[in-house]
Amino acid sequence: MPVLFDSEPDGCLRIGLVNNMSDEALLATECQFVSLLHSASDNMPVHLSFYTLPGVPRSGLTASHISSLYSNIEDLWNGHLDGLIVTGREPMTENLADEPYWDSLTRVLAWAQENCHATVLSCLAAHAAILSMDGIRRVKRNDKVFGIFECARVSDHPLTAGTASEFRLPHSRWNGVPEEQLTDCGYEVLTRSAIAGVDTFIKQQKSLFVFFQGHPEYEIDTLLREYRRDVGRYINGESPRYPLMPRNYFDEPTVEELVAFKEKAISRRSEELLPELNRILGNRTIANTWQASAAGIYRNLLDHICAQKKAMLVSMTMNAMVDREQILGAPYLPTPLLG
View 1 (cartoon, rainbow, N blue to C red):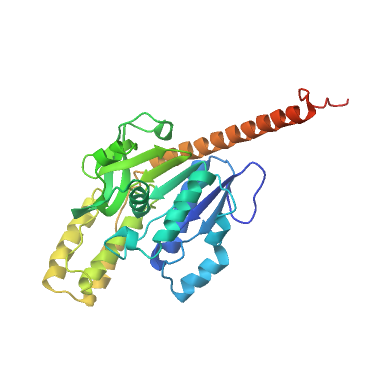
View 2: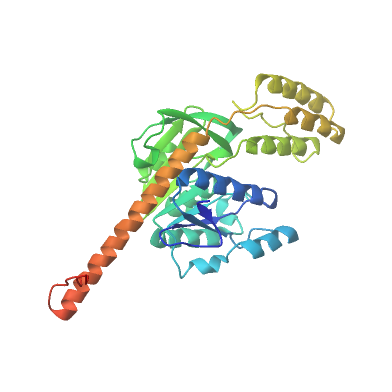
């Protein structure tokens, strides 16, 4: 299996995953990125290490899991990785700069700029990063961007090489970022949805930063679980508004049943309805229409990291040869092999 945890063979790409998702979604997020990297690696060995930001609240069981499998974020500061992926999480405050992990996140961003060839920022992490880097604030939408959305490739870039001119990707967010502010600050938009807005964008500085407002890593049932959670919050009185159904996701018979269930739940909020919801969702049919495109984008990302890593090694070798020549006062010639 190309995604490794307990071994690190020569020539592998060293990728870090800073998993900041809630306790309920932490393990699922691990599986999503492991699966996506496995699909994208094309037998290229990838060593994946896990981290999480201090300040993210954790229960006892999750804290125990993290202590056994995750590395301390402090281990990053004096080291290097070939690539880094940073996830978001449900916000706890209106202003992202007030989140308890804000200082740790900004330190990770500064570190990644100097010590990684590429960094991926997912959803809320993307919003936090552009706020930290360029002061761009996200904008709350009236309705949640939730479902599978058609995205158009609007820029020719190696990251989208080989993808269709239009493809589908999952989104799940209340906020978005104004495209004109991104371009004014030097970001390049790669994909855009007519409904969901900017999808994927990048910024090249000392290293490449890749921002996903969507979730190419989502597995086939991720949106289903989010929808069931949100309906449960409404029924339990935790949310005043019945959640939107994910767009372009369920088959038509399931949509019809869920519409009827919504009418029943709005007329009578009761936990007694939850078994019926579970029955409807248990009988659904979902087609994974985004996996191939997601794997293709991440494969291009791994190819970029690999190329940058090779270029850096060549540069280091050339610099070492120049230093040797300066010390010895003569051109460096490799020692011939004896035969």
